Amino acid sequence: MAAVIGRSRPLVGITASVHGSRIAAMANRLALWRAGAASVRITAEAPFPIDRLDALVVGGGDDIDAALYGESARPHIRIDPERDRLEMRALDCAAKRGLPVLGICRGSQMINVHRGGSLHVDIHEVYEEAPHMRTVLPRKRIRIEPDSRLYCILGIAECRVNALHHQSVDRVGDGLRVVARERAGIVQGIEAPDEPFMIGVQWHPEYLVADSRQQGLFRRLVATAMGAAPLDDIAGTAQPGAERIEAPPDRRPVRAQG
Image: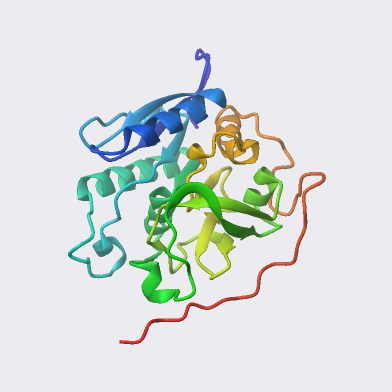
């Protein structure tokens, strides 16, 4: 992990597309600043040495090239191969250096692909019950595994999140586990239990600026980068007062016919 000595704030890299949303960039930078970190936007045209970072946020954006996980690309889907290569290299470096990593939407999917997992190219071809929802508002209800680090950070087993995706995790990558799903069974959260901080969320916490629980993801990322994360932040340790509910039933996807 990079040394934060000599800096007033740890430095967090945020990966993005060259033509990515400036609103998303500002939202991420604000969330990290409020959490106590400085940040730098990293794109294929504006790379940044990963070994100078203290943590990494793999941001949202265009779909990941399906060839990276053994599927065929769809002609109507926009991809960004240069960004894919940038993020794969960034995750390689982060893994070697033990950097804390937060994946947001596409970023969560990229963490899974980097670990050898695969994606559903289109969730609505697989999960027929899933509502067609696209909103920055917290309208989608998800459940979080009580023995997960994500649960420890959010302090709640059920919450509402936003939804701006049409792909999701299929086969789970090496060393990862699914820790959150929505009612239809779509994966909403993954994490690496053996890493200090590697969490991927399918939603966009940076847009939920008034939700202290969601902003806690950024706070914990920064705290881990500074070596100041609570010692009890381990799987199976719930925060006081957090709601406990039974884990959701195993919902297997219903594949569309034809």
